[in-house]
Length: 168
Image (cartoon, rainbow, N blue to C red):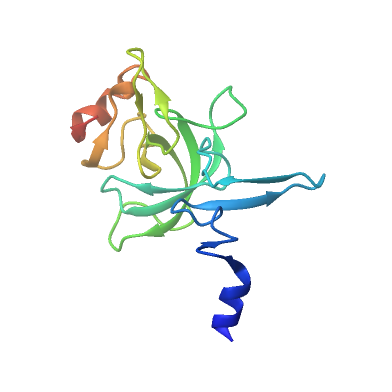
């Protein structure tokens, strides 16, 4: 049965569906107005907005936080170096932060590309944040893991830069 189906879908040595499976990820998108788009599937990177989950890259005790609000004038969301209000979703045992607590955090890695003044752009594989202390706007933890971009210097987060292991 499978051979008869394959013979029906092929014409000579080329399959009829060959344009959709030519080695790249492809998709057919159909909009509500009936327009059809067929082409390579490209994931669009967006701002960090309400509902975005971020990994925590300091030793404050939290593993995952979820963004509640971006503290910024831009309504689209937060980018590298912006402060967000987030809820703690997962914690490590014996940490300084409890599950369900509302905290402020700084975005230190974002999957959305950010242009630099020399024409290059910086983009990371994941979204990550560092939790801030309530009193003095410094980080709650004493170590920051992974690369941190130097764009945080413009946003006046110098304490995070001094605790970071790698600068990107």
